[in-house]
Amino acid sequence: MFLSLKTYISPGIKEGAIEEKTVTGIRENERFILLRENYDGVEVYPDFERFFPSITDRDSLSLSSRPPDFPINESMETKIKAVYPEIEYSVRVQLCMENEIEVYRLNREDFNRMRVGAVAKFELDRTERDLIKKVLEI
Image (cartoon, rainbow, N blue to C red; front, top):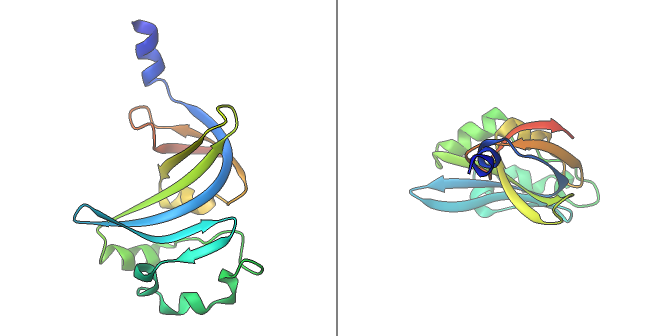
């Protein structure tokens, strides 16, 4: 019994390749995908477009010339929170050791540090196993 309890509360260290990044707005228990970045490029959804209409005109969002990531800055987050009181940042990760794909939530700063295609090592929260507590290396 002690061993299983210890296993449950000990932090989990995971490592894997970032396959996708997603920004989701949450309002009245409804979830709205706003932005998704993966190997194919950045997909901007209509709800995100209405906050930043010029963003879809940028050449940098095309696959061939886009930057390696699409950061969400504090100003953007503030505008989004005016409509969606809660914002969820998540990454889909191809885990190295488990050979599984998992989705993890994380804070905006760590979300911005993650790069699609990069390998990241991170520590999971002790109680919320789908929450990245700390990014150890990218």
